Image (cartoon, rainbow, N blue to C red; front, side, top):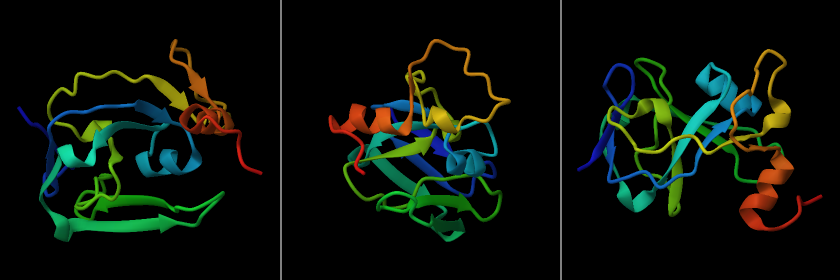
Length: 148
């Protein structure tokens, strides 16, 4: 059974066959600004399991300047309600969708906090989830030391 999702106003809709993870809470400055919150809770999805259903005409994309290395930070949002939304045609084998967009249970729980060195003073990461800095996350994902 498909897991459905949408923006706040329902103009943009999509579905997935299942979420594969990871389910990360990113505390970088950019994710905080896109989400308007302490961080962006995002769920990993295989591109082959994703179907964009409606609302491409309501999506606007923004590519922020590159900070460290390509690719740029991309965000898409609904022009009606401002919700972050997934792209109509994601690139690559895997991508992330903001967890709050799902209408149905995804049967995953957050598994880590990332970019914790950028967590603001007012944010208390008091749960037991693993915490990764950018350098630690790079090593975790690639097995290599941070370039530079």
